[in-house]
Each structure stands twice: as structure tokens, then as C-alpha cells.
Amino acid sequence: YPIWSKFGPDEMRISAMTGLAELALSGCSLSSDHLYLYPNGSRLDDTIDAATEIGIRFSPTRGSMSIGESDGGLPPDSLVEDENYILQDCIRVIDKFHNPKPSSMIQVGIAPCSPFSVTRELMRDSALLGREKRVYLHTHLAENDEDIAYSLEKFGCRPGQYVEDLGWTGSDVWHAHCVKLNTKEQELFARTQTGISHCPCSNCRLGSGIAPIRQMRDAGVSVGLGVDGSASNDSGNLIMEARQAMLMQRVSQGADAMSSREALEIATRGGADVLGRPECGRLAVGKRADIAIWDISQLESAGSWDPAAILLTGPTRVKHLLIEGRQIIEDGQLLTVDLANLISQQNQLAKALM
Image (cartoon, helix red, strand yellow):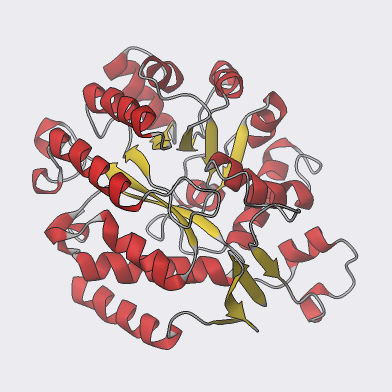
């Protein structure tokens, strides 16, 4: 948080461009970002501008934190926002940027950081506003044992019941992590079609645990793949994240717990469905022209006959990428921005924060 407090619009935009460029180069055509602190005049607009420059399809979420250190929260009081202002700014960015059409490149969501980062009232009011505006809702949930203990102590119930009581279940809601959901909560999410963003590398890096994705999928829960942020995952590579998802389920549940094809399904149509974009994430007549093309003729792919397995063990950079029919990457090179200049700007801004 002390470093985050030094961020401004340039840091937000350049860091978002860097992360989205890395995702695009790994074959990602649709992503979401959960920005929940806005120091020094930064706004969600900064990351939306970044996505537009890169050319990626984007589902930014207007995050928020309203409980500061003096009230038992994590960030300094100077970083949190007034809850009335939060709701008004959600309305502003939705009205300015959100496009509900199937061809849309920007669809905005509402996203309090977590149930312990804002008040019960803001969680409830955010859900009501989301339904009124017909946009998706997002937050972090049940990421680790501490989250469960906090929920039981402060709310008198588990996270699943808390979000259900406040209107935070349904096909227009997705929660990040959900490592510690129990069987009853998984059944709730399946019954209500509530989505989950699975972030296996982040869960490993932070020691959160292994999310029970096999059980969730078998129960009918909608699961997409997330790379989290660079502060809790040192990479933003969609293909390597899919491989990690597969391996972690095998470590936890056995060698046949997840196939490479299922991991890729979670990374593609799984993520698109969780974000409410069924027109994306699959190659079919009538769907959007978001197409990733891989070169599987090189050394790392030699000897394999299953294209799905090849992708999880072979090249980590896409050869060509088209988004909404526009070529973003050609022969492994990003066409939309000067990548060398972007890296230089990122490094300069990062050093200035230290």
C-alpha cells in the first residue's frame, strides 16, 4: 500500500498496458482487471485507455475499498474512498464506457475489493446498482483460511452465505479465487450459476491453497481462468496459467483429475462465459473473430500429436492474434504499440516508485 499510494494516472495506464501486452502475447483476447484503489487522480479510465491502445477486449471493473486502517481495514485511510462517491463513480464509468452489444470491446463491472474491504451496505448497494445498470458484479471471496475466519467472526456465517444474503450470487456475478469454498457453497454457486475466476499461480505464490476446481466443475460451477495481478503472480501468461491449473488439480486429486483440453476450455470459453461473453471464447459460425494461432512446428512441440497438450508444453508466445477481426499480433510481434518503448516507460516508472 505505501508503494500503491504513489501511483498516478501514468502508472496505472502504463502498468495496465504492460500486463495486457503480456497477456495478448500469450494468446489472450479477452481480459478483466479489478482496480480498487485510485490515488493521485487515477481513475478506471486509465486502464480502459490502456486496453484500447493494446487492442484487447476488456471487462474492467470499478473496484473499491472504503474501510481504512483506523477501522480495521488494510489500506491507509488516505487511500480509501467515500461510499457515496464510489457508487456515483460506478455510474459515471458505466454510462461513459459500457457497451452491452456482442461486438463490444468494453464492458464495465462493479467490484468492491472484498467483503472485508467495504461495508455491508456498499456490498448490497453495489449489487442493486449492478442489476439496475445490467452489468456484472465481481469481488474476491474465500481466498484463504483467514478469509473464512474473518467471515465467521465478523459476519457470523461463511462467505457463501454472506454473499447470498447480499445479492452476490447469480449468473451476473463472478468471484475470484474461492479456494476455501466448502461443498455446500459449491452447490450454491452451481445452483445460482455464480462464476469463479481460478488463479492457481497466485494461490501457490501466496500459499492460499489449491482450489477444489475438479469438485466445482463436477458440481456444475462455471469456472474461468485468471492470472491475478503481477503483485501476486510474477507472470501474466494465459497458457502457462492453464498448465498450472491442470497440474495443481492433478497434485490434489490424482493424475487424471484434469486433462489439457479441459484446462484450455477453462482458459477460453470458461473465462468468456464467466464474464458474460458467450459470443467469445470459441471458434464457431456467428461468434466473434477472436483467433489465436500457434506455431507448433518447433522443437518444444516435437513428438506430440494432441494440439491441446502441445499448447501446454510447447510455445508460450502466440504467433498471430486477431481480436474482433483486427490483427493485434503478427509473427509473434505486437502491432499496436511500440513494445520496447512501453517496457522502457514501465521500468522508469517502477524505479521511481522505489
